[in-house]
Amino acid sequence: MFLKRKIVVNRTELMNRIVLPPMASEKSEGGQVTDALCDYYREIVKDKATGLVILEHSYVEIDGKASQGQLSIADDSVIEGLKKLVKVIHQGEAKAIAQISHAGSKASFEVTGRAPVAPSAVAIPNRKVAKMPEALSYDGIQSIIQAFKDAAVRAIEAGVDGVEIHSAHGFLLNQFYSPLTNQRTDAYGGSLENRIRIHLELLSEIREVIGADKILAVRLGASDDYPGGSLLDDAIRASRMFEAAGMDLLDISGGLFGFSGYGDKVGYFRETTKALKAQLSVPVLLTGGIRTACEANRLLEEGAADLIGVGRAVLKNPRWAKEALAT
Image 1 (cartoon, rainbow, N blue to C red):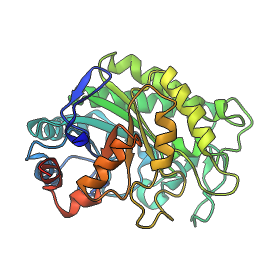
Image 2 (image 1 turned 60 degrees about the vertical axis):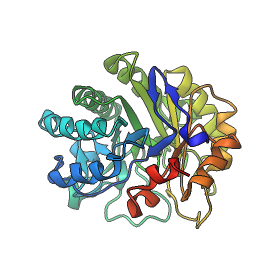
Image 3 (image 1 turned 90 degrees about the vertical axis):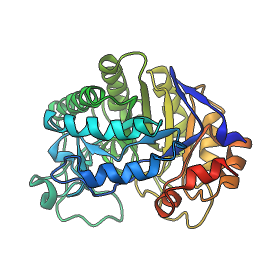
């Protein structure tokens, strides 16, 4: 059974191929870890059957906060709470990765109290915005890179096994990656190499502070599936450069428009992950629409991915991983 097989990511061994992907629980209060949040994860990992947990996205600075109940990793006050949360996951014998994020133009004044920022002063297509985002200056970009780096330091202090940068679902790094939202004419815009310059710089800076042994992952919204947007070829070229820059794990998801338009398809991005897996030596994670152990095993067997993320099915049944391994 493929799901039961161990796998080594960088220098960390996972006990199986089952991953709890990042899902916003909205159980944080003021950005802090709560008892309710710890209980939520404890219920999922208590069977000691999940190999890896990628924590829900945490904002690296207040400008990048996406929602009122989002978890924070923006200042040192959150570290003690995160330690408790990571301890819960480790007690379930799962490894833990912190996902660090900035919402960019998807942030709102109502949540942050500040005007949203983005690579360019344009909105995501088909998205209604109350206020057009302000284009980041060069100094603004450097400040955000520092915020991500500081967040990674806090994550390591909290005891995580790795860090993932969030470049999917239309958040800031995804906005840099997509030509629909990145219309810059400086070193951070134009060619694909320029559009992912911020990613490459982040990979370098974060590796420096987390060390060689920790997992460094990228969640990439591979394709926008929209005229003029990012394409599979962009994802292949970008992922190769991410791997060369030190990425240990590629986590594929939707681009600017997230999961919209995929319906009930099993393994939404299976063709994308299969194509990427053929080009990379690091493990590839596939999430989306996977409901049963048979589906997960089939995707692994056909070489669509190395790891399988199961989210909504686990929310409906926290015993999913235990039952899947017993199949």
